[in-house]
Length: 100
Image (cartoon, rainbow, N blue to C red; front, top):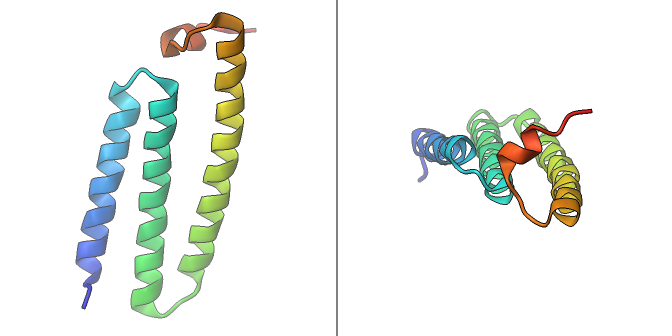
């Protein structure tokens, strides 16, 4: 028997690890993996509550989260590849200075 508190605690741990990865890592690929971990933690909470309350809305939200995360990674990886192709290195500070 899996209790909802355990699943929510696991999701909180996953979200915290993802947030730490986004805040303290300077590699854009690591930052994208950490943001994916945060998206998956949110989806896990929706699925856990959907199972607990026998409601399909949580699973629908989890599918929407998965689609949004996939779109975010697709666009983000395209930007990373484009920047790497022009500059031949990945530095998040240099990317954040690009404007215009």
